[in-house]
Amino acid sequence: MTLTPRDRIKRAVEYLDGWFDFQFLSTSWPGLVAAVQYEDELLWSRAYGLADVERGIPLTTGHRMRVASQSKMFTATAVFILAERGLLHVDDPVAKHVAWFRDGVDPDLAKVTIRQLLSHGSGLTRDSSDARFWDVDRPFPDAGELRDAVLSSRLVFPSNTRMKYSNIGFGVLGAVIEAVSGQPFGDFVQDAILNPLGLSATGADVDRQAGLAGQAGDAGDAGGAMAVGYGPSHLRAPRVTYPAIATHALAPATGFYSTVADLCTFASAHFIGNETLLPDTAKRDMQKIQWHLPIDGQDYASGFDLVQIGDRDIAGHRGAFPGYLSCTRFDANAKIAVSVAVNAQDGRPRALSEAALAILDFFITPKLDESLRSAPGLVTTDHANRFFSPWGATDLVPVDDWLLMVDPAALDPFNAPAVVRLSDADHGTIARAAGYGSAGEEVSFVRDEAGRIETADIAGLDYRQWADYLAHRETSLGE
Image 1 (cartoon, rainbow, N blue to C red):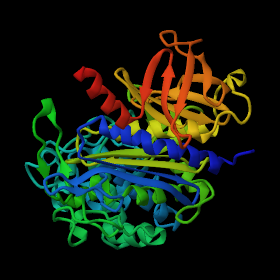
Image 2: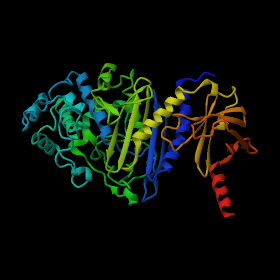
Image 3: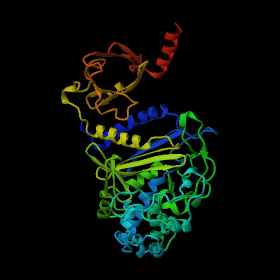
Image 4: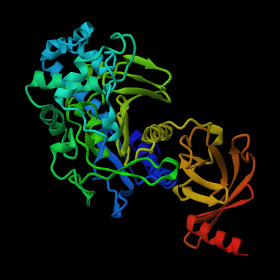
């Protein structure tokens, strides 16, 4: 049977569901939520853990989270929409549209362009000389404070000489958007981006929507409350909780809240061929590399960071805000997007989102030797199981006629999976394994009365389902 890319992605998503569950349960994070989009369809979205630990409220896919620097994707999109409307050019000097930008103590400020702000090449300070708003020790700057911070300081580096990440720069882009559109930043984003895409769970700042500043509530739909944000658990210290924090003039840099489903929909608007917001020429311009960043393991475009996963060019952005971490990654050509968010500051959504894309990529195009296949029909979905032993967990994963053994704790489980070649439905040999693995050893399965695989003998060791493993462990240790 020939499988379509959608069929293969759906099979990958079946595995991802349990893989994310294992990844989450291996941490102390309060909650995790993830989603996968293919073309115009949200194929999967699931929440794990709690939106509010103190009140015991489960996290749902409808709970919103602060997505911080993912805001930059929305702001950059707004700029390019204005460019498509002929109201600005991305290579215009900022001072052409924002008059006060000519009045800084640094005469080179007036030469900074919109594109340099979009790509963090302006040389502007990252967060100003007083960035304590990130530690929740003071409010985020308002429009006047943003203006004063820009005008009173010199460029940290000459413009267009290197990437210098700048939230202040994206705050200035908000001022550009307001000046050119004649609307408040949040209103323009609502009209030009959120409404056309139907992003009802997304907004530019928390003070733009009543009810978001309260505690997490029952969020069974997209109209739900904000998940509570938690600080890191440094050295296992108790986590602090953060209030809802308005970002004011830095909303274009870091203020947005959203759900992973909405973020996937937004990412899909940047797929090649989807011209709901922008023509493909504009999207390609936005996603064109402006800076190579080998130390970061990525590059930067205009409001998007760029990574390479396998042979895929991946765009997106990370976000870090008091109480929340998030990341959205997408392949604009293959039309696949993944979004991950954690309501804690010590999560790793970038690693999870990129690992998820690598897993999807493997299922779409398995890179395995044909000689490792079992005979047609021997490998079935019955073999898909997670087994436990005192040495850890092992996932058996059917992919076409290959039966793989992978570690669900790994961030790259399909990088070099062990392969079992079956001789019949319940017996086989480990045909490929790492040097410290058990290549050439036997594998067998025991089934229950209903025909479901109950235990596995892998290279002479017993592997059991979770409940059976726990019961056996108690019995064996008790003896």
